[in-house]
Image 1 (cartoon, rainbow, N blue to C red):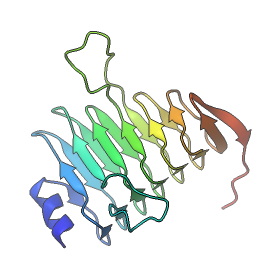
Image 2: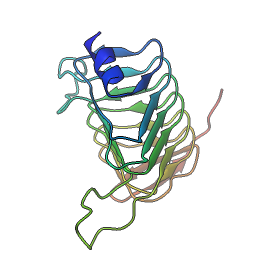
Image 3: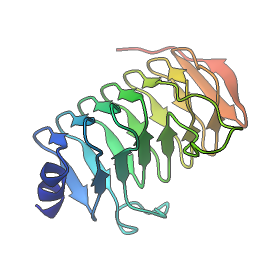
Image 4: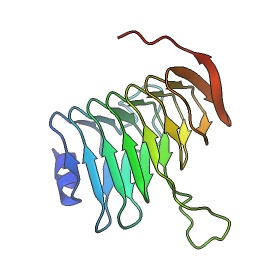
Length: 176
């Protein structure tokens, strides 16, 4: 109940059926938007996932005008999502423990950083333990990103990809 109240306080649109284990953290700036679909599952307690969670789920907008749009039936375990521009996550996306999704370098005063760039994760994607999704990336539907991967470039649909930098390992057949 407290997470629903915190979400409302920060102006987060939280769909019906959201489940919280531990305390998720939400933060929004003025003129920003976080919309989370139905049946989202947030594991924020170290007891909620036996592989180990290092931090609670944290979902935040970090620049004015930013949007985070999350589809239905998504699951997060100690996942950090920070948007300066736009992050869009489809339906049935699973984020393994300690994943990061960001569309920004976060250091605006540093001339070595580049422009913010939208992140899109399509339906039925699975991000393994410790995956980092960086700015400008699109991940195609039904793909699986292996544990510990750092995704810096687009990943097509229906593949297994892994590594640092993340690259396609094999094509998979997706059967509905």
